[in-house]
Image 1 (cartoon, one colour):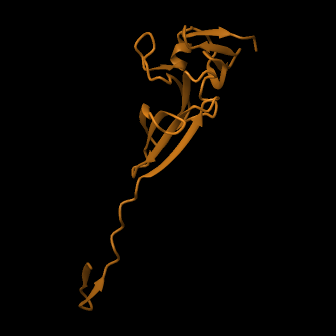
Image 2 (image 1 turned 90 degrees about the vertical axis):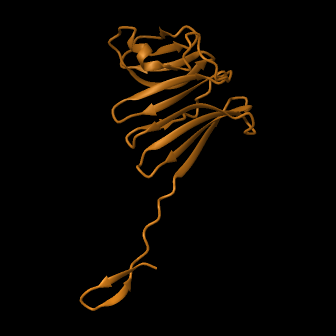
Image 3 (image 1 turned 120 degrees about the vertical axis):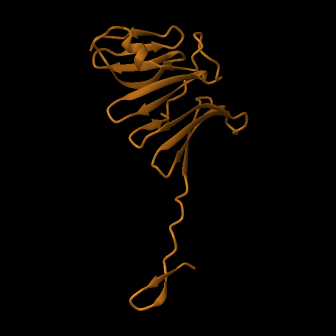
Length: 174
């Protein structure tokens, strides 16, 4: 036990124990493919400095053949989200959302962990949309309308984002 000398009374008084380190908190979320054969798991670890490290794994439904898809450390003002409709209908693609204070990002991955044709490990949807030189901005991505078509809502019309061609196809006017 640690003692502190009290000078005016001259007796030893025990100090309260020092606080122990706060353990890392870990939370897991998983989403299954439509056919129930595969899953993506988001593991969130909160550290003492209130940052979060997110790791995404793809595995078969039993948890075997688990492979890391993506890891990112985010500040307290940023969160990663694994939407319930993350998987494409055929289970070949999935998307992850990152929410920041005033913005968000959408990342599309191949479940196989293979790179896309240009060597990228994932597609960042918002910058690809910005390259279209349109005045609209993306307000949400709501899920899959077909195996390679991600539904994108904007401040104007809605679009499909075609994963294979990396192009945006306008659905209708607002």
